[in-house]
Image (cartoon, rainbow, N blue to C red; front, side):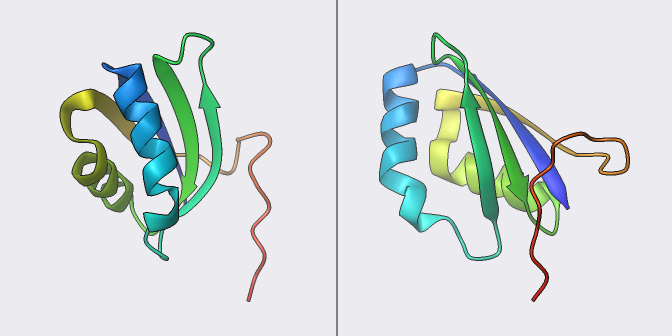
Length: 89
């Protein structure tokens, strides 16, 4: 399922530094498709693919702690426009 993570960043330097450092540590069952930061780098919207919203929320909380507040929710794929294409195995 596609999941949106809406990030409200408290410390931009710390957050984006951690993003860069942790990109290779994303668990195999979580797939990050896109990152859309705001011009001031204090907000970001990310598109994920995972089995549950909780899986994404838990990963983000464990990774970034309190330097960001995250709101994660499932995308209604039936009416969404522009979702990534997922290849079937």
